[in-house]
Length: 186
Image (cartoon, rainbow, N blue to C red; front, side):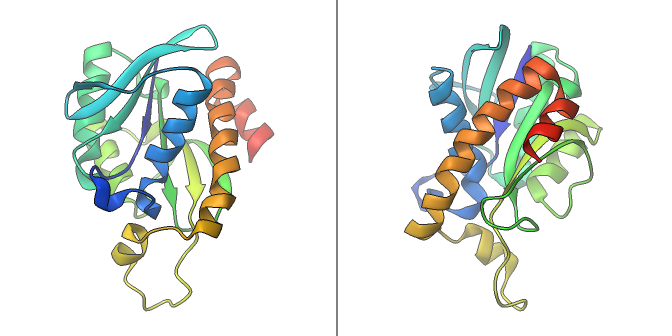
């Protein structure tokens, strides 16, 4: 069994923001595998289904980014899964717009949602799919304002095929493992 979580912030204010790439990508996963994300539990919206013959739970934490780990921890404990069975999808400003990178573990790299998950699960070991949102052109630009900022229409056009590719990568991670998915998608 796997928990697949897309990170973001709840509310209309954050729709199409850089920080909500995880939510948007999870929607692509849900569409590909025909899973409705409509149920509510543990401060999250979730749906249950099957990917590559494995039971999965798709989760969008509704705790706001900085507390995402609380929701993930509660789902982890409820479904009794190991950290290696939790796939996190999120935005990464250190990657160029539209670049995708899969990792089996790692530090938070300054991402507060990942920092919260590491703290709440007491581990840096969980597969992750990072979606590049680029960095601000001006190095003095406030990063919080940048990640909470909205994508342009052109940027969304770049990201749509990446979300589709990430949905395929989720299936590959489940079927073949993180290392094989890394060699195929990174």
